[in-house]
Image (cartoon, rainbow, N blue to C red; front, side, top):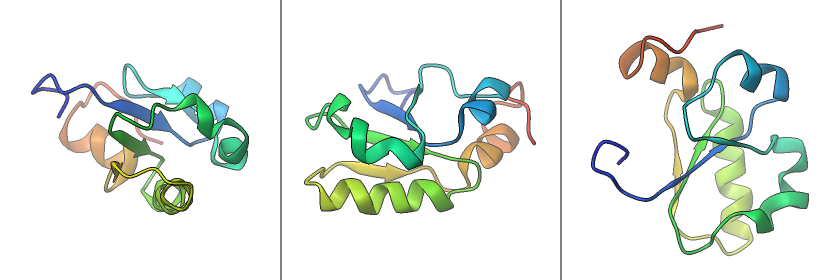
Length: 94
């Protein structure tokens, strides 16, 4: 999606220390634990790609946002760990 120039929101639901260590450029940090408080910062009219370490927190974030009426949600399968190994090897793994 990014390489095709699609306008998407990259939502990182990891903890701040994880985000500080590595991130996908252009992503926005809203830790999973405070997502209910900050969900309205997201644009409901644009796709949201949700990122965590391996895909578990982002899966639950997708389910939560769907329950709040968000419709165009994508869980980044394998999380940033898989992204680091298959898309951008400059992103450190941990």
